[in-house]
Length: 313
Ligand code: ATP
Ligand code: MG
Image 1 (spheres, helix red, strand yellow):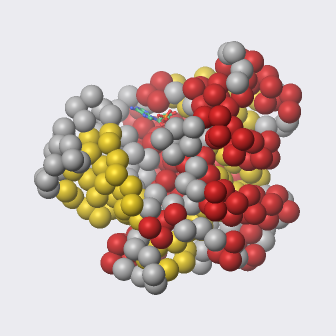
Image 2: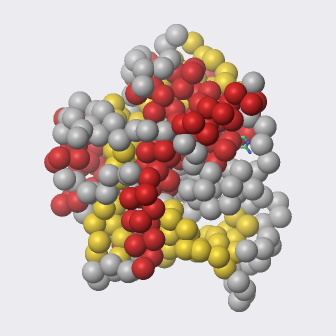
Image 3: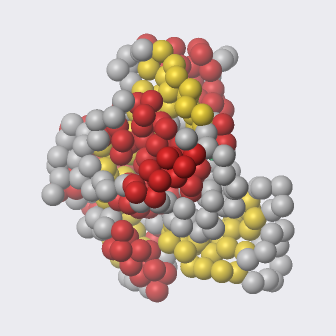
């Protein structure tokens, strides 16, 4: 069956500190593994919103890989594109939470970082309606960037709508290098899902308005959704700009907000909803994502998201 949404990138499990302010540099208790990896959180949220979604990536032939694969199966994420590599261990993110809301990470990317061109199965691309890429994936390695470039060519050839979330990770790739690495994806993208800071860094514009003008001049039919954390988001298009205010929730775990937001926005857009309506549902997905501990725990089903929106109205 042709896919609604295809993505690619780092398959991970997350192992997290139980208590706040427990540094990763000292012994202490963890909880996990939890299924994770930004593209996989994204695909899971899309599937929970009833989209036919797939993610391309790799796990090891080990228990952590099973942990992620089992979750994807439960949610009906198409896993044909997930390779099990016998010589690698599944990628792990160790995460510590600090009282000020910040997080510290230790990554062991393992199989999660091992994307290769032979993983780009033609049947995943044929008829795919949307291909979503994240800058964090492009920042992993030169090899990952090359594979994603090839995937982009396949997706464009298949006529898919291209969606790009820059997710700048300066610790992986400095902004100037990211600008070069991301350029092809930025120009191909009909949908851009940056933060304001990311937009300024990637366009080298002096203001957000100027950045938006540059991007809309390059491609007048595109939609730019600037996410603003708890404040929600702003939708920019040739028709002008519209604010979609955020929902008030208690933040428990910020992991996955952007990924769930992206999945919510694209799911609604592909369902034929106007961008502003898509942004409202995306805000609800992003808000719900931060209310639960565990990277995928806050990715809700369509019914749950709609109930939440109705309650908040
Ligand atoms: P990520 O680190 O996951 O990539 P991001 O910085 O790209 O996140 P944010 O703007 O922080 O993106 O969050 C994405 C969306 O999630 C926001 O536009 C908003 O809709 C929702 N969101 C995030 N944090 C909160 C919050 N504390 N309360 C309500 N909604 C939130
Ligand atoms: Mg982001």
